[in-house]
Image (cartoon, one colour):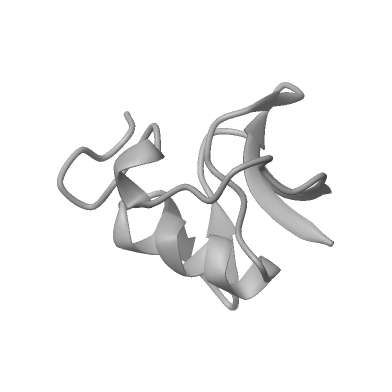
Length: 70
């Protein structure tokens, strides 16, 4: 099972092996608010999905720490 960042059912990121890895990358991009527990901003969700057909790197993200989504 792979995981990716979604908004309104649209996949925004490459897939990650774990939900925790997807959350970590979203946090590095400034997309996570820390309350009692980490919460994604702007109705973003981490959902299970099929893995990408070919391996992809952080350069394939729609957002990265160098290019935060906002």
